[in-house]
Amino acid sequence: MRYSRERGVTLIDTLVGSALMLVVFLGIAAAFELSVEVVSNNKARAGAIALANERMEYLKSLTYPQIGVEGGIPAGNVPQLESVALNGVSYTRRIFVAYTDDLKDGLGAADTNGIIADFKTIRVEVSWVSRQGERSVALIGRVSPTGVETAVPGGVLTIIVVDANNIPFQNAQVQIVNASTSPIINITTYTGEDGAISFIGAPAASNYQIVVSKTGYSTAQTYPVTTQNPNPTPRHLTVVKKKAETGPSLMMRNVEREEAR
Image (cartoon, rainbow, N blue to C red; front, side, top):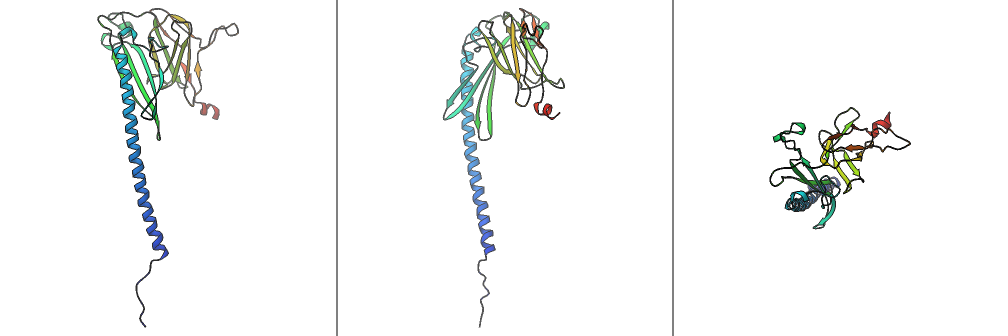
């Protein structure tokens, strides 16, 4: 009696084959999902660039005195923050305008002509949320006055933010409010690499309220003078015409480290 030497398909063979097929299909699905995500992000990024360009060109089309933002220094009619929908994507558009001192003719007291508001810097940032988190694009431009530059009224307001080790604190959110000026000042911006933010042409006034915050850190702020607290530390800032006002350094403390002590 003869026996066949041919083997049948065992359960192990079936499982191995199925596993290989599953790996292949998962790889194809992942590649497809990635390609869709790349296309989606590129589309969203293109929309963000278009929105940033649109606002930048609009600001540059204004006359020099008109270039500014609502509640800003300098003031204008363009909102600092707005929500915009384009091609099914929700964007947040943030505009920042400030006078800038040009290094070419000297900075601050070393300025050769004594005029430190040499031009206006415009920053337009557009952000959106993707599956990987928040993404953003930013455009920066500068606009110079027509003809000879002239001095601007007011003084210079500078806020400095440091950490518990007195190291400059970057990307801290700074809110500046002064209800006594006309128009009212209400600015939300962020510190740079040097932990500072400066505004040339800040209206001469008292009671500049400063609040500094960042997720994971304690909030630092200035305080008003009251009958209960006649000598607050630090107190609201005062800007004097043609003077530079730099408030005391506002310290940010890591909340988690403080709680661990």
